[in-house]
Image (cartoon, rainbow, N blue to C red; front, side, top):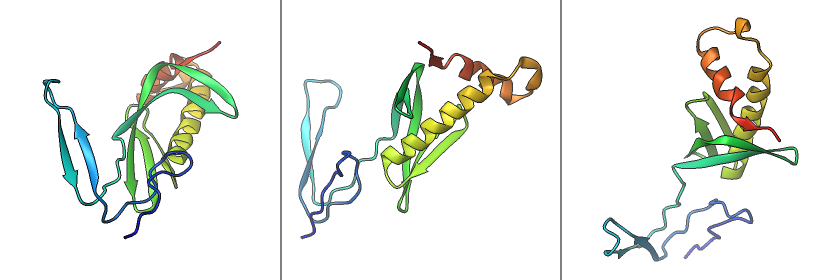
Length: 139
């Protein structure tokens, strides 16, 4: 039986448990009923999305006015973090790396769009400029 660690030191899913009993606990609506479902193979849980409430860039924390919904996926050995509204994606060997990658893109485009004047943009760029201008709470 191969039982490698489910979480690395950053508590991210890196490997799949094989041939072990895992019990998943579900709480359906209405809340008075809950039940257990048993399975014989562990399927790693990759959250479908992660809300990003702040950007951590070079040791500095930038709070966001609204959370950015980052969709998480995995293909092969790479994890991907994507946001359709901002037209951004990041990738990495772990979920943390993918989120750090997209955070750096958000930070870059926040600086880029807030420094453009309205007459320098056309099309979808005006929508993105409006989003980025109000995205970060500057303290």
